[in-house]
Image 1 (tube, rainbow, N blue to C red):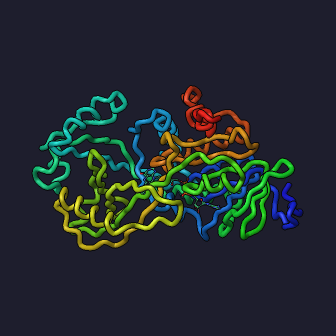
Image 2: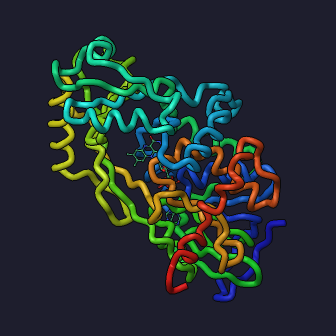
Image 3: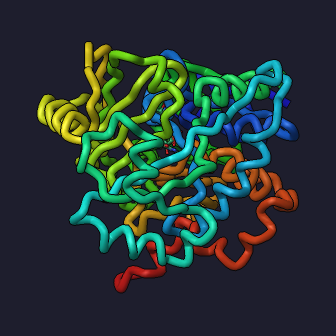
Length: 392
Ligand SMILES: Cc1cc2nc3c(=O)[nH]c(=O)nc-3n(C[C@H](O)[C@H](O)[C@H](O)COP(=O)(O)OP(=O)(O)OC[C@H]3O[C@@H](n4cnc5c(N)ncnc54)[C@H](O)[C@@H]3O)c2cc1C
């Protein structure tokens, strides 16, 4: 049961939970919602509301093609949840078909051939010649693209709705979300983690590090060796386009080398220079140069009349040194569970990753959609970096 008492430093410990989750982005909320079925859970978030960082700044697409088989498996395993209708959001859909078109200029045809022949793309990508492409996207500048690959079943993910679903599920099961509760100190004492925040001290035997770009910093607070995560900034512009009605049903369109993309989404139009600039964890801000590059690249490719730039923002995507997510208990510190480094796939993998983490934390069986994971499980463990180190 929840209790109130004094921590070692004499501060009042507000509650005792089974699990504390640090960070209320998609990772923290999804795992908290999954855990709340059987555990007392509190999510601690530094900001005054959830989803203020990567999760609230993404232009989220669900796509099956991913270079890493494990991420692909986590993606496929999330699809049943994302395709389902959930009562917490009145059965409204979480995904809708969009399609993803990868454009190749004449000088990118070798790359297009390689991508198309890659066995991982088999059954996912379909090649379009220049005339089929011009019919699908008449707004392309004549002669810009020689060919394209279409990932037909790529979907938009409604991120605000997905976040609402996890929040409501957590609340309905008496889980708590405490905002304005940045964790400033962490220590392990008497078999439990104590997290000091501006909203009080919280205690639980298990702590989930879902702090996004700050996950390494949070580990340092606990005296735990960081993974070596790097955050990379990506810029997005919301633009107003002439003839918007005709453009709403276009697929997401990206350059094959990913130098820009265009995405109609929920009645608005997003464009990005697909930048990946290393950045420090923090409130990512767009840079003028990226905005200019973005507009130039979009104008070179499309015959769009951009009437106005309505909003510009940037978000951070976090990567481990090998680009794979970091999921699992820290081998050297009891009860410290890593849920970090989701890179560019943290939204589309959130349901299955949450299911995996919740099962491991509670000792339950893995959900059946993760049956295929067993041989690949070690590739996600935080200990893989320590093992690879010649100094370990
Ligand atoms: C422009 C852009 C486009 C993207 N497109 C896609 C896409 O198409 N598909 C896809 O699947 N993914 C996409 N992503 C990636 C996806 O957004 C991320 O992988 C995902 O949001 C990461 O979620 P998170 O919860 O780990 O991080 P965050 O959403 O950043 O949440 C971390 C939270 O932890 C909190 N926190 C940090 N430190 C503390 C502390 N000490 N105490 C308390 N709270 C703390 C932060 O305030 C923050 O709210 C995109 C990302 C960006 C930026």
